[in-house]
Image 1 (cartoon, helix red, strand yellow):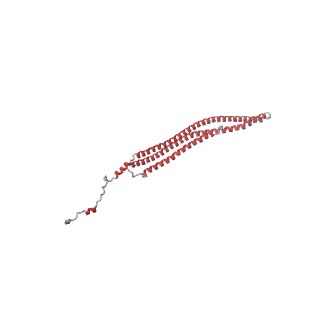
Image 2 (cartoon, one colour):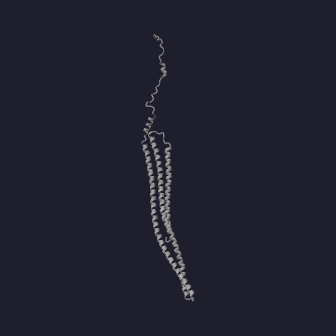
Image 3 (cartoon, helix red, strand yellow):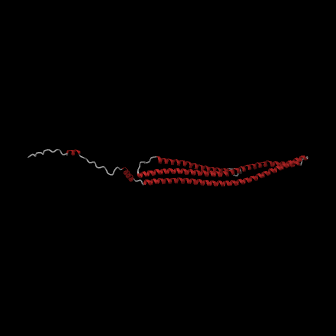
Length: 297
């Protein structure tokens, strides 16, 4: 700004840096909330795999597949819990980065606040001296002119001496005022140059910090996405174990296994034969009787 005491540009930079810090805090909170969700989800999966029956009476190869299934679901739950811990660690790193930037920036801000205060005080003092000169110098020169004219018409030496004394005092006051004004302007110019140099240094520092923040934020987001992708890949590997186990599941083997486990013998029951007890009873041989007499024809 062309106004020496204005801080509108500096304030705009500080506001932008504070907004950037706020954005980092928002992402940090996002990671923390995601960690809570992942941890809760992981614990629920583990509880589900351990407490919920799932084909507990199955046998042989299908049973092994179900055991692998439950174990890998447990592993997926453990993976989500581990991801939650990783997210908390990343959130802590973001917090440390944010606080580190804040601490470093605070040192520069204190320097700038002090130099702004010194600049404004000197500017105010200079303007006050300038205003005094603007008001006092014309009056002083007018007084000198009137005194000079009065000297030509004074008959009394005592009055003349008083005028000379007043003239000398006025002249001295005028010179002191002008000298003070010059010194204030000189001091203000030194302070202005110092402020300008510090302002440039501060802007360069703030720009470096902003570049670091954007780079760190970008990398943190990239890392977060990679972590999520890695989690998906690891989960898919666990699910692949389940698929491999299911490929080993054999219907024929499971049926044979059940038969062998529950078999009661190797021979089938003998056929049930009909026994004619009625005819058998009639064919029993009776007691011997006289032979019949043949009948002649």
